[in-house]
Image (cartoon, rainbow, N blue to C red; front, side, top):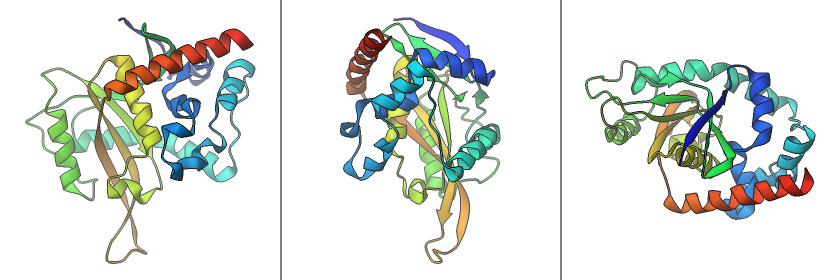
Length: 240
C-alpha cells in the first residue's frame, strides 16, 4: 500500500478546503457512532454525527461552537507549537510537521500529523513538565522500540480534563491516533496532553501538567477503517 502526502496545515484555509474531500481521523468516532465509545461518552455525539460530518464535507457547513469551547480551541491551536517544544525538552526532539497523509488502502481517509518523534537513549529529560515521572519513563521505554533514525507520530492535545492525570486517555482520541497509525503504517505513537493536575492532599489546588502516553495500534481497527472508508465513499456518491 502507498502512503501519500497530499497537503499541509501550514496554510489553514487551503488545509480546511482539502480536508473536505476526506473523512479525517478526528471525525472517525463521530462517523462510527455510539458503539465506538462507552455509554458515559454519549455527550460526544451531540454534535459529532454522520449528518454533521456530511454537512461539513458536502455543504461547507462547519460546526458552530459556543464561546467557552471556541476560546478553548483557539488557545489549544495557538499553544500547539509551545507544547511540542515542551515534549521535546521532556522526551526527545520532535519535528513539527502539519502534513496531511492518505493511504491507498483507505483513499477516503486522511490524517494530519502534529509532529514526528524519535528516541535518543543518551538524552535525559531537561525540564520536568509531568507531575508523574513514571509516566515519562513509561513513554521513553515505549519509544525505545524505535530504531536509529526511526520516527513515529506525536499528537498534541490541550485539555482541562483531570482524567489525563489519572492515566485516562479519552477513547475518541485513541481512535484518532489509531487512525493516524493505520494510515502511516506505524505500530505505535505518542499522544501528549497539556492539562490540569489536582493535588491529592489539597484537591482545590490546580497545577499544570503534561502527560505523554504510548498508543498502540489495534489490528482490528484496520477492519473498522475498511468499513468507514467504504461507507463514507458511498455517502459521497449518493449525495454528491
